[in-house]
Structures are given as structure tokens and as C-alpha cells.
Image (cartoon, rainbow, N blue to C red; front, side):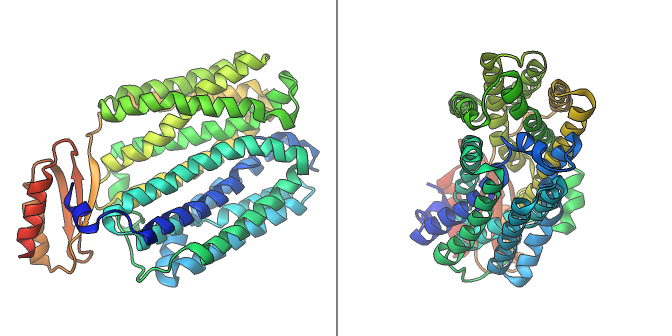
Amino acid sequence: MNQAQDLAGPMSPSEIRASLSLAGIYMLRMIGLFLILPVFSIYAHELSASTPLLIGLAISVYGLTQALFQIPFGLLSDRYGRRPLITIGLLTFAAGSAVAALSDSIYGVIAGRAIQGAGAVAAVVMALAADLTREEHRTKAMAIIGVSIGISFALSMVAGPVLSGWVGVKGIFWIVSALAILGIVVLFAFVPTPAISRFHRDTQAEPAEFTTVLKNPELLRLDFGILALHASLTALFVAVPLILRDAVQLETSRHWEVYLPVFLLSMMTMIPFIILAEKRHRMKPVFVAFIALIALSSAGLMWFHQQLITVGGLLYVFFTGFNLLEATLPSLISKVAPPDLKGTAMGIYSTAQFLGAFIGGVCGGWIYGRFGLPYVFLFCSGIAALWLLAALDMKPPRYLSSLLINLGALDATRAAQYSERIARVAGVAEVVVLAEDGVAYLKVDKEKLDHQQLNLVLQASKA
């Protein structure tokens, strides 16, 4: 057991409550963004002034506004408080959903989706989670929130087609608006009030350090990876709903019959490869192989999209790759980023993710209008192939984990002493101790970390 666990014990009921309730807020918002993804390109043809390019823009414009506002929202929450910013963001999201629901024009839906994205509360939710959890349990809280994102995406892919058959896409937008309001209820009814809110280097972006992070070629490679992955995903959903309806002759309300088995099987398939990558230290070959699967399955959809069995099979391969890469990319960011700049690295990474969604929708819509649906899949394959070329030169990652230890009030001398002594502990690869934070940021090899020695160092330093 490491020193962090000795000091803190298990997560407290308050920390568990905070993590679950904030994950619920995150999940409600992400469901709101994703619910229309599997049905909108079909519905959009009923809107006035609709064109393929504008359809792609309506699907993905939220990514642009999300990318623009997410870091500013997080910074503003340091000054004006977490709850007010989350409330403003969710009200903005609800308003955007209402605008989209009331619109009979594609331009109105584009405006609504842009407003939805402007309610960019993701960074604020992470900051509030950091306020409400001790450093020693921060990773667990973030993992709970991360799992909620995957669940929300899978639920949306299945629920979207079903709900479109029951209430139509306008009804889905109203449901999304209600989910945002429900998120506010959860915020005030279930999320504990933090004793203090402050800046957290492990979860929040620090603009002064952007240049440092952007100069790191390995981090840039991963940022391009998440951009390419979400560009492929969003472009894919410009085309797939129409392919299922027109080429495969499957009613929109029954598209869930494809998505449900695809997602269940892909999630089960990726688990052994996650274990192989992380536990067996085979991250790079697994990572590169699954990028190749994304490229190959997308190319396959370009040529073999007339039969349900081939479409389903290729989507299964695509989403096996997507789910694995979506899960491993944040882990790689954590491994590569300097220990005290993880929050900044993740902020830039998230911005790239949302920009990728925007680029994918716009490019997918334009290609659909100019060349036809099959060529949208060629775009997906092409951007994945570019990512594959970039990933081939990536350095094999060090298999390190982040560890944060709260040391309490420190002056510069004691911080330097802590840093020097902790650095000599077996299994500690990097350590940064900041007096102003009172926190030690460590990168450790869990298999080699001498927990007893670390405990003794910390106890001796406090004596």
C-alpha cells in the first residue's frame, strides 16, 4: 500500500458521492450531444435550406464552440465559482437544444447546436471533482467520470434511433433540453459543496504552460490522434445512418438493432487488448494495429455497404478500434506529460478532440455533397492513415502512473528537500514538488515502486 493510501484510506462517502454525481452531470450532457448523432443526417433532409455541407455542419458545429469555450469556462470557474459556471453552461446547453427543437430550418439547428457546444462545462466539472477529492483519490474520481462518457456514447447510439421513432428528432432535442435541466438539479441536490476551490495542476489547463506542452512532439502526436479519431467518428455518422436506411433498407427506428450488438461486441473484444497493452507492456504495437483497423474498416465501408452483414461487421471492427483508442489515448497523455502539467496537456488534448469532431462533420458533409456517400468513408480511412503514419514514429511509452501526495504547507527549502529524497525512492521516475501547491507530483513504476521506502521518506521529512 502506498503512502497516499495510508494517509487517506479508501474514498470517503463524500468523495464517492461527489464522483458519482458529477459523473451523472457529465453523462447527462454527453447523452445530449450524442443522441442525435445516429439519426440526424436522415432527419435533416426534412429541414428547409438543407444541403449535405450544412447537415455535416449541424452535426459537428458543437465541437467548434466546445473547443473555443471549454478552457475559458474552466479559468472563469476559478474566479467566479464552479457551481455558477456549471449552471450557466447547462442553461446554455438547454437553450441551444430548445432553439434546435423549435427550428424548421437547417440554419436554426446549426445555431442551436453551436449554442449547445458553448455550454462547455467539461473542464469545470473536472475542476469541481478535484476540489471535492483528495489528491490521493483524484485518479479514481476521474476514472469514474471517464467511464460515464463511454456509457453515454453507447446509450445514445442505441436510444437515438428508438427515440426518433417515438418522438421524432424535435422530440429528442426537447428531451436533451430536459436532461440539461436535470443536470442542474443533480448539481444542487447531490454534489457536495467544496470547502475550498483552487487551481489544480492535474486537472486544469494553465495558459502560461501552453507553449511548453505544444513543444512536446509526443504530446502533439497524441493530440493529432484524438483529432483524427473524432474526425473519423463524426464523418462516419454523416454517412452511416443514410447507408443503413437506403442501401441496407433498414428503418431508422430499427438502427439500434445494428448499433447494440456492434457496441457490446466491440467493448468485449477490446478488453483483452487493453490488458495486453497495459499489463504486458505492448502499448505501441496494439495502438498502431488498432489505428490500422480504423483505416481498413473505413475503407471497407466505402466498397462493401450494400449488405447488412458487411456493414455490421465493418462497424464492429471500426468501433473495436475506436473504443480501444479512445480509452488508451488519455492514458498515453498521462504517461507522456510532465507530472505537474497533466491538466494543461489534457486541456489541449480535449480541444483537439472537439476540433476533430467539427472538422469531421464539415468535411464529411462537403464530401457527401460533392462526391457521394461512399467517399465519406474514404475520408475516414484517409485521416486514419495519416494518423497511422504519425504513430509509427512514436516512442514506446514508459509504463508509468501518476501519483499525487498532499504534503501540506511548504516553503521552498522543504519542497526541495522532499523532491530530492522522493526522487531517490526505487520506482519513482519523476517528481515535482511545488511549495505553492503543497503537492508532490510523481510518475512511478507501480511494479517497482518501494512503498515502504516512500513512506519512510515522507515520515522522516515530516519529523
